[in-house]
Length: 198
Image (cartoon, rainbow, N blue to C red):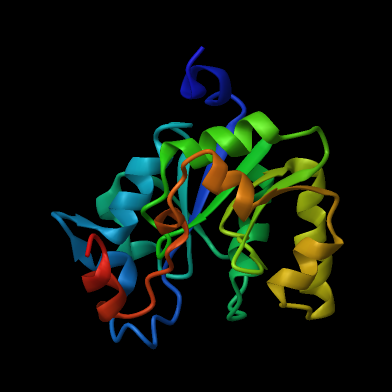
């Protein structure tokens, strides 16, 4: 059974877009690489697991070009957690949380997340000493950790993930499976984009 056949009815994808992009100098979600915007690359790669793809943003008018459902952040607070808690009402089983500036992940990564998942635990990747919150798979029951943190004004993503029940996929697991660390490359500046493929 293919990944999409197995997971599609159970997984909803939420892609964070429209942050400050201060280091990039413009909205990096719309920056183009090989004919597609970074947001479109993220959507394209997410389609290998589900057709239920949603853009989480404070700027809903900017991303209609994707053809995806747009979910506006519930609050004006400048934190990605605002987008995460905004999608919770739409999640029945699993949330695949993504970000437009980590667009070049391999299908193998999604397969890893899906195969390693366990009921009532987040499945998160640990690379270069940090959890990767925006390439993670979260069951509905752990989403309240994000809500609780938001209500407390705790916006430190690493600490929130640390507090969750979770399955951790280590960097060594990925390397053994032949998964390139480029899957986790975060595009923060135009120079980062220029380095792709070099």
